[in-house]
Amino acid sequence: MVSFLCEIAGVSRSGFYNYFSLQAQERRERREEKDLILKENIINAFHFKRRKKGARQIKMTLEGQFRITYNLKRIRRIMRKYKIVCPIRRTNPYQKMLKATQEHTILPNLLNQEFKQAIPGKVLLTDITYLYYDNRQKAYLSTIKDSSTNEILAYNVSSRMTLDLATDTLVKLTKNKRVKFAEGAFIHSDQGVHYTSPTFQKHVKKLGLGQSMSRRGNCWDNAPLESFFGHFKDEAYIKPCNTIEELKKEIRRYMTYYNNFRYQWNLKKMTPVQYRNHLLQVA
Image (cartoon, rainbow, N blue to C red; front, side):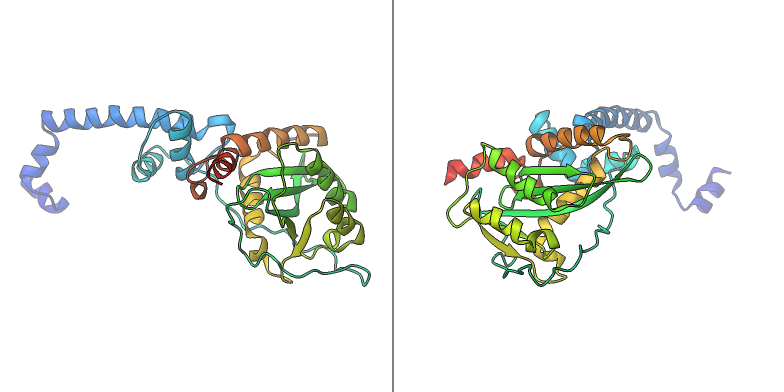
């Protein structure tokens, strides 16, 4: 009977008996015990700061916060085995804002997708995205990001898409004492109505910054900020917020987490703040 079943299953008799041998069962039990330890460590990193993470984020968090080193292959195996599911990135459905009027000025693209210039405070990226919370209530988030370090330098949240949403973000940038503009610093955006506005452009000049704009309809010209918005919407707890104040509190928590605790593969596995300090030390 055993020979017949082995033939149907396509395994050898010796393989069948070896699988159910005492030694093989003990090996499987030892492997399962090791995997449970791996699972516990990976779950601790997965939920670190209450933000779910993918395999790369888990690896960097284990190394940076828990002083544990696992390779990506092992982490992904454990995640598959125990169904530890990371957030799934979705296409950003952000629509272009209203076309600029004749009095608004479109400026040339000074950046040309040269995002990583290894100089903190040299290239600042800005953009606006929408957020849905509390059963489809809508809010807007304006951010300014350091292109070289990925650090969020300033942000502003509002329930209205007014010009103040962008200009107040510039005001908050000036209040950030950590920000020091490098020589030739400029701010880069899309051609949205906020950024072509004479009022916004005057604010930029008062800060002593240059201004750059993406080519029309080219989202790749501001890709790092689009990427940030994607991660933010996956990882922040936006939808459960019941009020705009709760939303602002959650965004404040996330920004602290992102700048100080969210390790990034392309920043030599450092957080944005760590990488900024690293660049300043080697300069």
